[in-house]
Length: 362
Image (cartoon, rainbow, N blue to C red; front, top):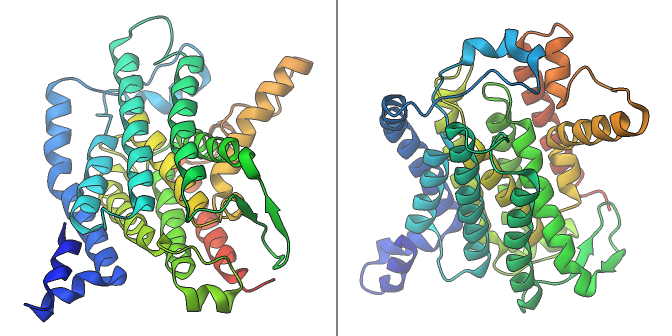
């Protein structure tokens, strides 16, 4: 909204400041943070009154009960005010004519709705499963991702070429397979963040690091001079995604205010699915989806531990880990919850630094 005020800079020169991405990104982050801090306590009070609370005891993971029982009754679905703060900030500070912003907005909103339905079904105990059936949820994730993937494929400013790290002359044109690649990245990143969301502040802290780094990458990718200097693909209009990333960072900090150990509210699928999908979409639009493997290394390891555990058990009848995702394996190995969280954050920071420092290596 405020971006459009810059059109009247010939009348009031001061409003020209709304043209600058850096200013609007800073304000989007600040707005998202303030909205979370203000409305967080209101949301927590309301969900407590309505008994929208975490069901800690699980039939499929009884070994976790000794760690999880103290979390019983903690309000959940806090992703509602995370995603709400992000989207309101984008409506206020984003350029709503920018198709990159609109695509990411769409992915974030749709996955938040899907996650919200999943949380509702889970909390109400509808059916025999914890939430929506896996196949049903996957179907809707893929459908949402394919819809935006087709739009991205037809977009004149989005190339189907894949930017391969460390090689300045290696170009892989995916052609029509770009559609399936986009869907894969969005769904994978969405599920990876969802799987990581198991300890107080673990997922949101790592999301914060990834979003901050993607914000920096978005800015240099959208800047012709900077992208030319760094020998990375220049994507006109991608700089606007810096505003979206800043909003995620601000909302993450605001939610962490309440979600840090010991948490007074949990994110729920409404937050984790939307945040993961948004990060994946941003990485695609700025042509950094392969960089996301390193940058989001914590999420990759968490998701990989689940995949390996399932395959190992089905093929050999044996488990590789005491429990998956990996953070639960560490819990059952005697690690303190707070130690796991902080060390995962440290790894996320190191991976973010590594991603930024390798930009010039071509």
